[in-house]
Amino acid sequence: MTANLHTSFLGIDFENPFLLASAPPTALIESIDKSFEMGWGGAVLKTITPDDLEMNEASPRYAVLHDRKRIIGFQNIELLSHQTVKYWCEGIKFLKQKYPHKVIIASIMAPVNKDAWQDLVKTINNTPADAFELNFSCPHGMPEKGIGMAIGTDAEVSAQITKWVKEVAQKPVFVKLSPNVSDIARIARAVESANADGLAAINTVRGFMGIDINTFKPLLNVNGKTTYGGCSGTMVKPIGLRCVAQIRQASKLPILGMGGISSWEDAVQYIAVGSDAVQVCTEVMLNGYKVIGPMLKGLSTYLEEKGFSEVRALKDKAIATLCTHENLPKTPLAYPQIAHDVCGRCGKCVTICSESEHQALRLDDGYIRVDKTRCVGCGLCRFVCPVGAITSGK
Ligand SMILES: Cc1cc2nc3c(=O)[nH]c(=O)nc-3n(C[C@H](O)[C@H](O)[C@H](O)COP(=O)(O)O)c2cc1C
Image 1 (spheres, rainbow, N blue to C red):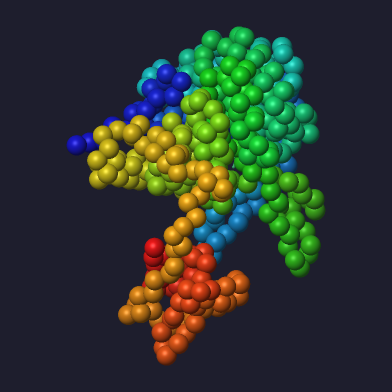
Image 2: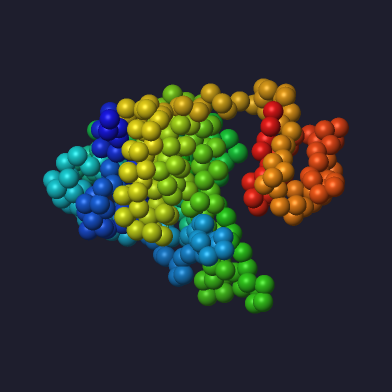
């Protein structure tokens, strides 16, 4: 059996569920051309704006977070596409002619002005792009002009612009939401009631990577100054997954999930909490378009091994596990079980247990013992055991 990787979103057929997110990997037509050759199912173009929208970029634009030698996230302060609307319209036609089965989504942003949004939409209506992604979520630079995240953090303005776009759009319209809000479900419901056809989440998470403690200069140092930027990559995956699950619970609209996807396993998780397909940016910037190869192969093999004939079967598989804290089944407690033949007696579990309140583990006669009168079953000890000797028993 070969698993079927086809999926659909807003009635658009996707040959596989992996799209490039709107970002530097989709900033040039020739790059998207190359990515399609390598197997990506589609691309969301770097956000297109009206030609007269001023954009002054800063240099440098990135800081990174390392976990030992590996980069696990970016903070970026890059703005939107620097190409003209004409460049994109011609480029979309070229790409669709060459790759009729690949999905091309026009990401757009304009000032909060009906004509500005509608003119942009009407121009792109004349191209073979498959849908519009409304960028209401860029967290740097644009909010200072009253757009980007300034739109996506305001439910009324988000709904108003969605209505303007829907009045004239001749293609499906979905909204890319910001994680930088206290209640993403509220914004999702607002654009749903304004007739959005779908949702995407997340854009980058607003953050500040740090300072050099010798010079007190920011790590993202723009001639001695810095600004808050958008964080992406592995370090934001828990935030992205949470947002997608929350909007799946709040709305019936189809979703494109993203945020920290670096493997097929991450994609499975996003689909299982409600995404129809996924978008990837930082992983592609770090390791190239070629990461699509292992993603496709891994997903296919996984589906076959699990006995799923198609990727669509994964959708929402895990969403019912999410409930409020109040509704969690609180018993039985998950006491740790120690494999004494594997345990190296290093004492790391004893330290974390005693210094994280409970003092339920002790080294006694050369064995780790669990005092069940003190253990609360928090499960933390499992994660510090370097040899995997602790499991969470029931
Ligand atoms: C350098 C950079 C530029 C980006 N530019 C855009 C953009 O123009 N429009 C947009 O909607 N999102 C933009 N994004 C956000 C990504 O599309 C994506 O939502 C985010 O990076 C999370 O996905 P990831 O963790 O796979 O990178 C940008 C991200 C990065 C890192």
